[in-house]
Amino acid sequence: MEIRRQDLNDPGERGSIALSQAIYPKGNPNYSLTVEDNIANIQNATLDEVKAFHKKYFGTASMRLVIVGDTDGANLNASLKKSFKNWNGGVTEKLKFEEAAKSPSKTEVVTIPEKPSAELFVGQFTGLKRADADYIPFFIGNYTLGAGFAGRLMQTVRDNDGLTYNISSGLGGNIETGGYWFVNASFNPNLFQKGLDATMVQVDKWVKNGITAEELENKKTNLIGSFKVGMSTTSGMARTILSFIERGLEPNYIDQYPKDIDKATLQQVNDAIKKYIQLDKMIIIKSGSLDKDGNPLK
Image (cartoon, rainbow, N blue to C red):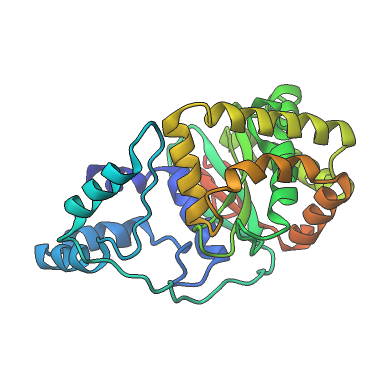
């Protein structure tokens, strides 16, 4: 419970919740409840409700089990049947919910007094799912903009402008729903507007001009290399296969993924950026020691 109460004064947590609520309708898996609602739900939960949930949803009906290593198939199969023979729960039906749509631009401030840093969230709905053809090109485009210290945002807003220690962009969303794109950064409240302006300069340039051929080749090399490193252990391979299965892909996609990265063209990447990000539809969340106009609290 203590963690949830701390979230009330966490600019990152409150900002992330506000972004999800600005993008998704209630009932969508990507719509986050307020901290207050989560606390109330935890306090009101009964043991009978927990047991009923476990009985309905935990079971073999929709279980995915991935085993990687030196195993004997016949003995393993017999062992699994014995271990799970009395476990019949679980559900197979798909989630039913209202899907999101691209929203109008919006700016919202979440005021939390006496915080040394304020969080910026910029984002919008893309509708992309992992199995979509445009996912890989857009993923590469976003990776160029905001992945780690080699991303454009770190090299400009952090290294060149000196406005933040941490800024990145990413793709979010439940694995079976249309996703969203976002940028997240931390700024001193007194530098917040400068940080927002510098961030939007880079986002604007990214959308209008795309990435370069040199960036594309560098990111392809990085992505394929890191994927192969992750697949070098049995645990890494098992996690990767499971993540692909959960996202509607076949286990053998582990062989296809590096090929999909490698064959993405500069045109496909830059077209995807323009297709899914509209500069006039940005949702901006300012969270921290800021007043209703986004200025630092006195």
